Length: 230
Image (cartoon, rainbow, N blue to C red; front, side, top):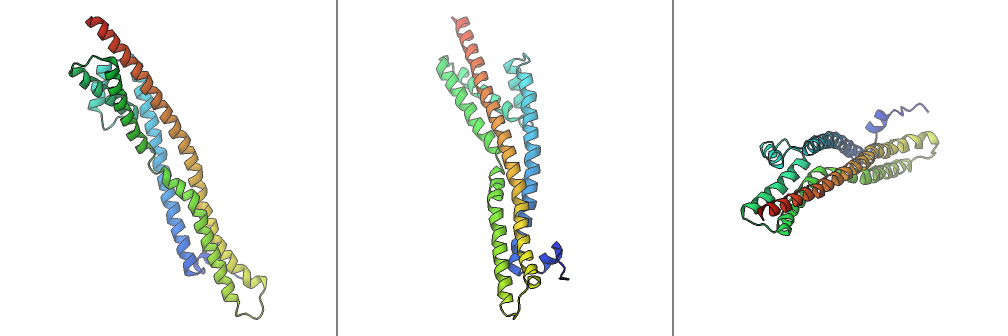
């Protein structure tokens, strides 16, 4: 058995269909890694911006000052700050209409913050479904290449009078490379998906907790203003 069984040699000598499958899987793997790094940096930035704003929110700064800062830095602000700005904006609009009913004010602010929350979560979850698809589909794509390669290999051996392990092994090895590449694409995508899904759940809990806490603060303010007005 003097055949060259290096990975490169097996890829170059595989059938056209198997080579196309390998090329597709390599492209998917590169796209998956690009999505992983983009999501990694994006989530790190989101968590950092949320933590900075949360510290500032609880530092005693007035709501009006926070709202003015959020309006000026809308493009650079994080999800929590944008949710806060949405709630304050709706609250102030209702106050300008001279609406004093506590339930109306709070319902409007909560609806605005919930709508902003959904928009922010849609952005945070970008590319997550792509990683899930890569993790679930890539092994089957690689398996298809393997099955095709083995079938092609055995078809080529049909014309031989004597078949030995030396004649069968190269074709099967070439086909199995497709499965290996499929797993290489799938495993990092699955690991990254699980990690990002856990991080996104934590971000969602943090934002929902903030919405409830901010709603309580607004409700106390409405009650205090109503009492002073009386």
